[in-house]
Image 1 (cartoon, protein in one colour):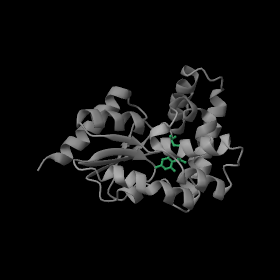
Image 2 (cartoon, protein in one colour):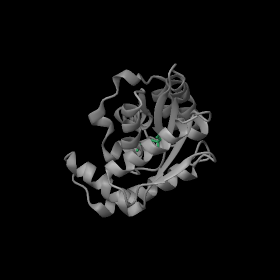
Image 3 (cartoon, protein in one colour):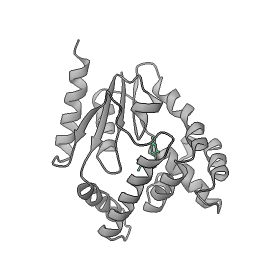
Image 4 (tube, helix red, strand yellow):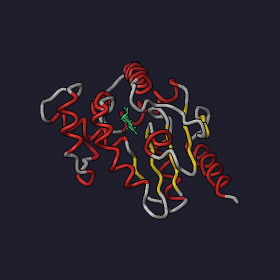
Length: 208
Ligand code: C5P
């Protein structure tokens, strides 16, 4: 079974995707890690994330098995990821890694922005996870502060709106709900409720 989970920043899609993978015993790929790792490589090389050739070179030489979780989870890496991810060359370079993962026998769970629309349009179940900007900003702020970053909630909110805007406005594979995706709004749900709702949707789709 192939499950696509898309949605904006801090909507809960990552948590939901991990829980679905555990519940249905499927491998999981958080595709945001790939774009974040490309962004970190570009920054570490002293290049500008808006430089398409530098970003493409980083994407082509990316080794997904060597991604440093601590480095890619910072707010700076996330912001740069949303810039490198707008380059069509970067998206093309990362497409085959994601599609190879999606095509594993037995299926997989992938989460990102364009899984249901571009990477796996043939997915068996597509979820589009949303939440209000206020709730998402507060979730991300808690996550960053929990990781030891010093950042104001207002700053997280403005970065979130900026990233949402960039992800939705890019011409190549923008953040978009697939026509056949089921929307799951987690604004008023805690983690457990969101996970249960997602499991119910997938289980409902599995019934003959
Ligand atoms: O999901 P996460 O916040 O880790 O993603 C970081 C950035 O990578 C996003 O803001 C988005 O610009 C980009 N991304 C993407 N397509 C995906 C996954 C992430 O463009 N499938």
